[in-house]
Length: 166
Image (tube, rainbow, N blue to C red; front, side, top):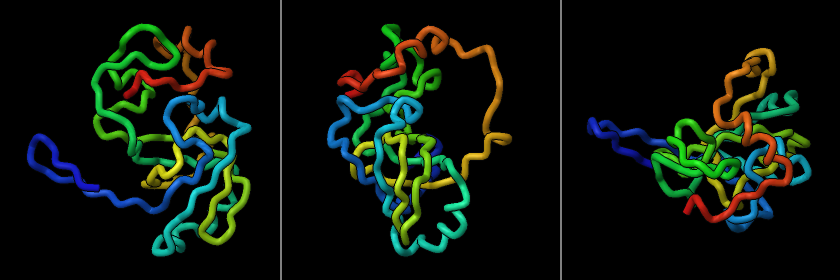
């Protein structure tokens, strides 16, 4: 994946693997991994990146960065948990300039180059860009200021995606 910035610079990324998921359409998917605990999937890491999986099974949760390959690019969106429009950087909407996704998954099992996980909010075929261990002491911050999400979070249990990001 190549990208050229407005200043002429180029950023190149290549997938390290692919998500295998029961979700074949972006409509009707869970919108956050915390609300998708019962949904499983697996990530196939390409053989050339297999060495990078060493010791990953020691972690319960992983941060998975993906390329949202079927998303569109927008700067203003009405997120799934709200009815008002917001700047995309104040949301977790998939419609973003670089279409980078972030999912925190629970690793169930590592089998060779296959990561079986729970907490699936990803579309089948999604390219995986990177995987990092989730470390609560490093990753969790306590805050009271969460913007419009303060009201929107009440909708999360059972909330599914619809077609508004197309």
